[in-house]
Amino acid sequence: MARIWRFGPNINTDQIVPGRYAPYMLKDESTLRNYPFIEARPEFATTVQPGDLIVAGANFGCGSSREYAPLALKLVGIGAIIAPLFARIFYRNALNLGIPLFEADLPAAVVDGTTATLDIATGELRTSAGLITLPAPPDFVRDVWDAGGIVAYVRRHGRFPGQPAS
Amino acid sequence: MGQTLAEQILSHAAGRMVRAGELIVVDVDLAMMHDSISPSIIKVLHHEIGAERVWDATRIAVVIDHVAPAATVQTAEHQANLRAWVRREGIRHFFDVGQGISHPVLVEHGLARPGMVIVGSDSHSTGYGAVAAFGTGMGTTDMALTLATGRTWLRVPETVRVVALGQLAAGVSAKDLGLAVARRIGADGATYRAVEWHGLGALSIAERMTLATLSIEVGAKAGLVPAAGPGWQAHAEARGIQVPDWLTVDPAATYAQTVTVDLARLGPQISVPHQVDHVVDLHELGRVAVDVVYLGTCTNGHHEHLAAAAHVLRGRRIAPGVRLLVVPASAEALRRATADGTLSTLLDAGATIGTPGCGACIGRHMGVLAPGEVCLFTGNRNFRGRMGAPDARIYLGSPEVAAATALAGYIAHPADVLA
Ligand code: SF4
View (cartoon, rainbow over the protein chains, first blue to last red):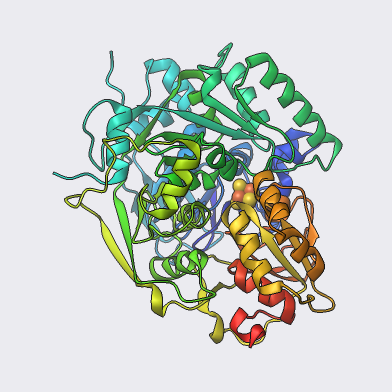
């Protein structure tokens, strides 16, 4: 069972990983996994388990283009992020890294700490608050997830999303 | 059917007529990468993608601005490695420590031009819209893929049109307009969309860059100011830049939303902690004492902004106990400020001058905030912890407000201080 980590709206990339904890600033880059939400929610990095889910309010990931924000979430094994709206660059960075994102506004009953299981393929989210079917992403997005990220996608398909197969 | 500026530029880059909503692949005219993200881009480029060389060394700009000069042994080592990579790849446009922040530097050097598609390893790459380029920010992997292929993929954005009517009052500037728009449409008001800024032909390129960089603060993919008007002419003539004939404001274009702002009725705006769209009129704010006034960044560190602050500070001294940190956006801004006396006015008033670059904007060096400190910042983000301690408080305002605040010791407008 995964745990749901609930966040409010407008979570910016400085909250996910402050600029002072960028790989550029670290003695050992692999320690990035210790820093997601290091200041905003210090218990997150120490207790998050692989497969846990983030459920947030609108505009998740706004702010800078730092890919190390979603990368830090990938390093701790986040299973998916669910929010009504994602900031554009964050959405792309997470997609490129192969982190599943679902655009959905979950009811308040799905409180922080709720246990859940998510079937990425069907979007079925089972929680103690009931069964919620998350809206399906566009086909190309699922193809990028299936490939495991954009670099693998380009390698597999020989082209970018949006480019006709030649 | 008409096309927005974003649709025109992306149609040109895609080699076919495209419309908002389409997923397309475009040729990139220029790729910008800075010191903070370059090490990871280079790693992905060579090790994950497996590219031996970049696609075109003449179309890449590398700028050392985020920690400039280096603050630690690690950043120094990363920068040394970056210089070696730049030499090995023969990168044409390299701007080392002290040349300034990527966005103003590329504009001042005439590398960013109307109609181009520019991708940058930095969210404020929307700033290239100051010269009607489609500038957009991307992460490490997208940048590395562009360096490998010269292309990128994107969804053609819808556009939010901002129409400014009338003239700005004295002491009110583009920053106030940008914050007023954030207040109206919210921090996600233009997510996945472009913003076009109309009715601002008189504005200098510096003031246009204020608006273009602030476009990401409402979530925009690009923020374009039409290449027209006296402000544009001055910039274009000095650099011999032509506007492509296919790029014009099309009255038949379809906009997702239009936001009208009456400039004459716009007063100074302040964004209060910890969100850019938490904006109030300065006079609603009450008395907010500050420890630091920080004048700089890609949004408000240009020569015009330093001069506007100097105009307020001339012949006066900043309040006791206040630090006024001035970090010019570029070497060019510093040079011009030196030549016209702006710099000595700032120094006489009690300012401290930093190396052109990002400075303390991302809380890494050159003026990081202590716990509990309050800063009036001319930058573009007041996120918690952005400039240092998570419980420091950052208020965003214009250069004019910055100068008045430094004199008063609390957040103030020039009209209050000069009266
Ligand atoms: S000045 Fe600040 S906002 Fe502008 S590019 Fe540098 S770090 Fe980013």
